[in-house]
Image 1 (tube, rainbow, N blue to C red):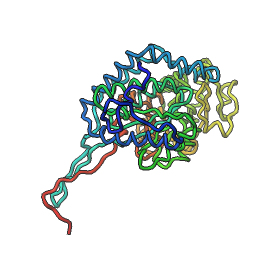
Image 2 (cartoon, rainbow, N blue to C red; image 1 turned 180 degrees about the horizontal axis):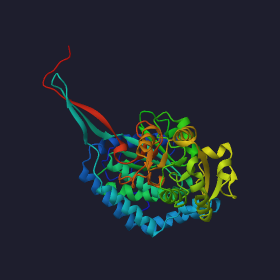
Image 3 (cartoon, rainbow, N blue to C red; image 1 turned 90 degrees about the vertical axis):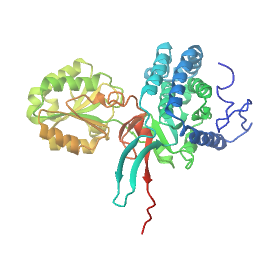
Image 4 (cartoon, rainbow, N blue to C red; image 1 turned 120 degrees about the vertical axis):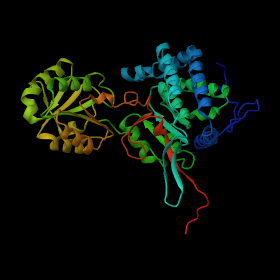
Length: 443
């Protein structure tokens, strides 16, 4: 790659005069962040008019550009690892690490987004009024989206691809520990946009790495349309408290599985093991198991033994502890905990009502599942549990955009404006009304 940032010679309008994009030699932090947001806003006006073919061509070129710059990407990632790796835990170092396989996966994901249907311009419904007006709703981009995330450099490419396909411009602010990796990935993506005639400023990494840059970004009402924080509860709360623009909130994933009195116990055991053990460090892993009292004697001894064999630390209510000697006494804090590791809270409850009351009190509106053969109870659970994804006889691990058929996701919203649950391309758009008349006037 050249020393200049690919695509940097494009002005905010997307046009080029062959000269570098000039920026002030000296600028305050606020001026720097605002200047990038202004360029993003200008790019959004152009990108919103881009047709599907143009966007798909850019996505394909983005994938090719990443593949052609593997050596540069790995070198940039090595700088981040050398600089910050010693201060990171093992899991964080793994999330930061890039190799040929992970870069290839990023390219594949971009091509998969290109193959997805374009939501922009889709008509979601039409109807005629008694006065003859024809009313409809059409999907349009949100505009400029700020994404704040930690570690994972692959988010840079994933978020850029999803935002581009949905007609949105993205301002990315990754963790400082991944800054070189993110800048280099974004450079590849910007070069691809430049080559295919779309504004390079549709994808930008925030140039300033100070923590205060985030505070400024989320306060740019009128320039930023939406902020999506991807990270731990502390990050999401900090962004939400300081933002002057809408924020997609996902504080934590306290996910429950309730095993009903009518459950197929063999199925329930398989679901619970998968929900807890298959990948315990993610937000859709089960954190609390609820079991109907009438089947506790039949179900819990084998279930708890199986979980212990899988290396799970168990914390339970007094009734649960009767069924296995290695269960620690659960505290009040355990019922609302997102462990993100092989720790599980287990509680025996008196039926569906108490299970739903527990979820209402301690849940995080993320994902809940019921295992049952009773269709009436299943329907009640689906209707009454106030979470973004509710499952019957399936693992909580299916609460994922790809698994739910969205193709990909940019995050999971546990707030209700404007999306709820995994956010795919459609959730990165909003609808506007359109009206066809034949000269009607209001009297």
